[in-house]
Image (cartoon, rainbow, N blue to C red; front, side, top):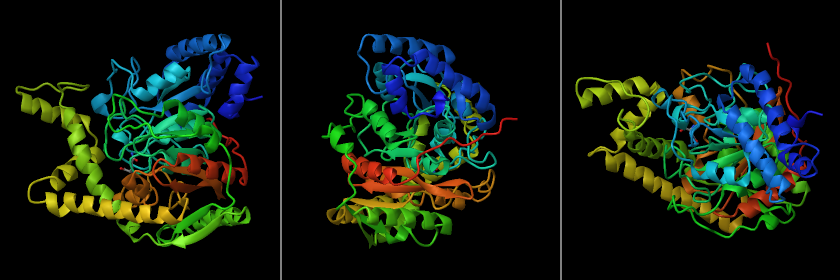
Amino acid sequence: MDLCGLAAAQMRRMLDSREVSAEELARAHLDRISRLDPAVRAFITVCEDRTLTDAAEAQKQIDGGGQGALTGIPVALKDNMITKGVRTTCASRILEKYVPPFEGTAAERLRRAGAVLLGKTNLDEFAMGSSTEYSAFFTTRNPWDLERVPGGSSGGSAAAVASGMAPIAYGSDTGGSVRQPAALCGVVGLKPTYGRISRYGLVAFSSSLDQIGPFGRSVEDVICAFEAVMGRDPHDSTTVDMPYDGSKAREPVLKGRRIGVPSELLSGEIAPDVSHAVRAALDLISDAGGETEEVSLPMIEHGVATYYIIAPAEASSNLARYDGVRYGLRIDADDSIEMMKGTRSAGFGSEVTQRIMIGTYVLSAGYYDAFYTKAHQARTIMKRQFQEAFRKFDLLIAPTSPVPAFRLGERLDDPMAMKLADFCTIPANIGGFPAISLNCGFSNGLPIGVQLIADSFQEETLFSVALALENLLPPFALPEIEVA
Ligand code: GLN
C-alpha cells in the first residue's frame, strides 16, 4: 500500500496501532519527495535531518501514550513561515540565506504537537502573486498537469499535498493564497477567521489581511491541522480565544442550513466550466436539504481594487525592514544609503518592487485620502454587506477561482488577469471571515474548487457544512505524475 496517498486521519490510526512507525512514515514521504519533486518542484528546502529527529521525538510521544492528532504526521510549511534553524527565504533573493534564530508560533505549536517537519515550500516572492511564478528561484508545477500553474501564492504547499508529498501543509492567505491554489490543485484549503491563528513568525505581507491556513486532502485533516495551531498567542495581539467546539464542528449537517449564493460571484468573470461545477454542487446541497438562495453583495465588484490599495500600502511598510542591516542580503557600498539601495534593488523581484512603489504612492501626502482612506471606507461598507447577509444566511457559497489552472506563463504578461485570479477569495480577507475551499469536480482533467464563507468565528458551521458537502462528492485520489 502506498502510505503517502492516505489521509492524515488514517495515518494516525496506523501510527496508534503500530502498523507503521513515525520514522517509516517520514521516510516514505522523503522518498516520494526525492522521486517526484524534481518534476513538481514544490519544495525550496527539504530538511531531512530535522525530519528524522522530529519523527524520533514523535515516536517517543506515541510510545508514551501522549500523542495528539498530528503526532508523527509529516507536514510542510510555506517558506514565509519562520522555522528555527531551517532557512526561511520567502522565495526572495533578499532572504535567500536567512536562517531564523527563533520558531514562529505555528511551527512551535506543531513541533510540540509532535508533527514531523518535511521542509519548506515554494511561493510567490513574499506571497505576492497567484501562480507561484513570482518565486525568485523556480516555478512549481501543478501535479494534475505539469504544464500548468499550481496557483499561488502558496502553490508549493498545495502541490505538495496534491501530489502525496505531504498529507498536510500550511500556507498563508492574504487575498486567497491558500484557497485559490487548493482549488487549482484539487485539495482542501482553509483561511480561518482573522485572529484565530497567530501571525507571530509569519513574515508580514499585509498584516490586516494575512492569516495562516492549512491544506489537506480531506476536511477532517484540515480541521485537525487548524486545531493544532489555533488560539490566542501573547506574541500576536490580534489573536483571540473565541469559543470553538471541535465536536460540533465534526457533525456534518446540511439539512436546514441557509446558504446564500452571491450573484456577483456566479456571473461575469467566472468560466463556464467553473460555474457549471459549482451549480452542480448547489444542486447536491439542495437535494440534501440545504436551502440555497441568491443574494446580491454589490461591493464584491470593488474587492480587487480595494485590496490592491490596502495590501501594497501595508506591504510597503512591512518590507521596509529589509535594508541590508538587519536580515539577509547586503550589497556593500560607500555609504549606507547606497548600500540600502543596492541591497533592495538586487534583493527584490519586480512584482515586489511594484507593490512597494504602489504602496508608497497611495500612502503619500496628497494621495492618502484619495486612495488609502477611500479603500478603508470601501472595506467597511463591504464588510457590512457581508455581515448583513450573515443575519439571513448561515454561510455563503461561491467558486474559489474564476478559472481552473492556467498554463505556465499565460498570465505573466497580463498583471490584471493575474490579479483577477483572486476575485472570489479577496472578500473573505477584507472582512476577516473564515472560508474553506473544496474540490467539486474536474474539467478536462483539471480540478475545480467551491468555497464556503462563514461569519467571523463561525468555523464550527463552516466545517460542519464542508464535511457534509464533502460526503456528497467523490473522494480525493492522487494524480498520476510523469517523472522524466
Ligand atoms: N494573489 C494575491 C496577491 O498577489 C493574494 C496573495 C496572498 O493571498 N498572499 O496579493
